[in-house]
Length: 125
Length: 404
Image 1 (tube, rainbow over the protein chains, first blue to last red):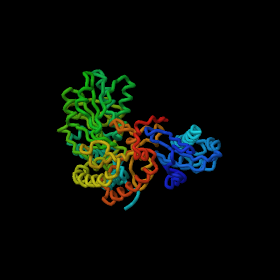
Image 2: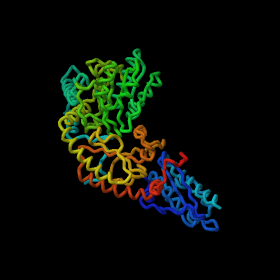
Image 3: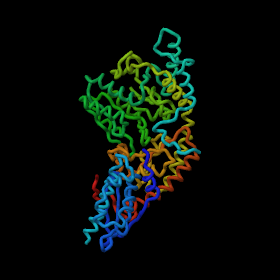
Image 4: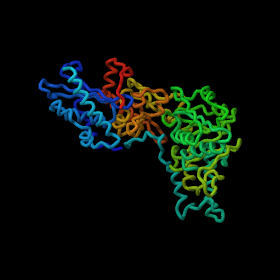
């Protein structure tokens, strides 16, 4: 199966790889997926007091499309408000990365990850 | 050295140039193009002669009688003919079949079909080495068991089953024994005089022959009967109708003849390369070989790099043509059923890579692969949340994951 150029670019040069302190009140952490399925995605967001995502980091265990989906997502959510970030749809990610049908679940996982990170942040407030 | 480097000889092999030459001689007007069944003229006789020679070459590799070789379109067809053929012929004797969970899909799906027809199938669990425990096998046999089907060499992990010992057990109970030898012919010595095997499936394209041709060994002493699956002109003693594909058969014959001549030297060289590869990789932390390392063909290395998903590793290793036990490419998301049957946990099953080496693999290629893999495992682990958790001492198996 051939990958799109965008997937290869994110895979070879992943943006915003890393970790932030999950116990920090301004950090929201979303970890979704399962090793059994071959995908685990962890997305972390750092939120300013006025509700804007200042920084985002990810780590992903999964195929190239899963890595690319989470890398792209960290780029997109930075600078967005929580409400804006919560409205990102998996189809937008899939379209941007030109994911084939068997890889759509990777974009679904990315959408789940940002929602989980936002929920985690809100639960701390 | 050219890239990508081919490390997928268990999937298929290139046709040896000596084989291709022989095949080309059986196609055009100036060659041996006749129908081997045309008994009324020289074109037919010459084609029949070529087929007879090939049949002998195939039989010679396994020390069988050429009359015991039935040509088919490949090992999948041979498996179907053997299992369905026996089941349908002997159904009055019993309707129970024993096989193993790590068999090739050509055997497993054929058994599933027979279950739909009212047969009963026992799927044995292998041990964590991939090998079958003989007592487990014995315990599964019943008075109405008509067939045991066990592969010689596993396609994913390369382990070699004890076919000789299994044959002793089945023969004593007068149960027929079928062996899928698609991955073992030309790699492991096979002597039908020594083995109590009734049916054995072969493929040409795994040993430098062409795709689209295979054979089924059908024992004459004791005589095994089969119900044909393909009906027509009654070729191959009624067991498999259809005009014999002279060029394919000649290709298979030549590939088997070369395998008999070169197997010992090839194996020795390939084993050295495989051991070099293993040595270059086993220093990587959290690396596990899948399947028994001793009871194993010399060209196979199936290895899991824990906390790195197989498909992403394959993407990083784009200069290496290898295969992965992770099935993220399929819609199922299920990792290799073979590794699961060995009791490997999901992370390890999803993290596996199969290297299969062959006649044209070089030392330079092995060294290149070792360097590439060492470079990329570190990079991918930096990306892996599971690796970070492992390094922080978190027990991943204790986490309740939301499987999707």
